[in-house]
Length: 157
Image (spheres, rainbow, N blue to C red):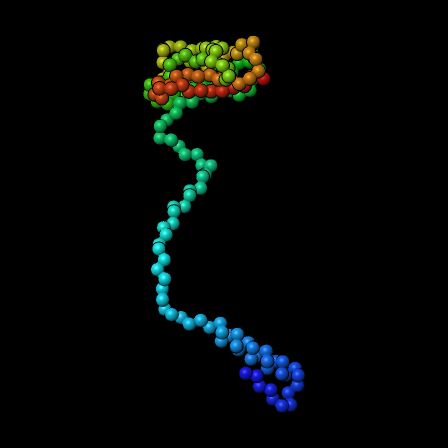
């Protein structure tokens, strides 16, 4: 309801009209609360996905290893092979060399001289053939505790 007072200026009338309009809008926006609660089914949240880490986790089963140095050599160079068995049963003493892309053996040596088995870590030098082509090669030795071969890699340039 609009009320115009006599003696009001045009500006005062506009202010009064705007105030009355604001009161009407406020009264229309009030919503009545009915106190009714809607039943919503409970949804269980899935477990969060675990983030991957770059952490190295030590395995319980020991692993033997075979390390060849230097990692990059020329044909005819001498390499050093260091081997550590994974357990008490040791390695078979035969150490063999292969090109990475073929199964053709290119050489072999004995990792230990006194027995058919190496029970202790070994450190062996081996002279590579002068005829080796550039590429990746590996040496392998059988670890009796793992019942599998252990590998070491090197590159001929």
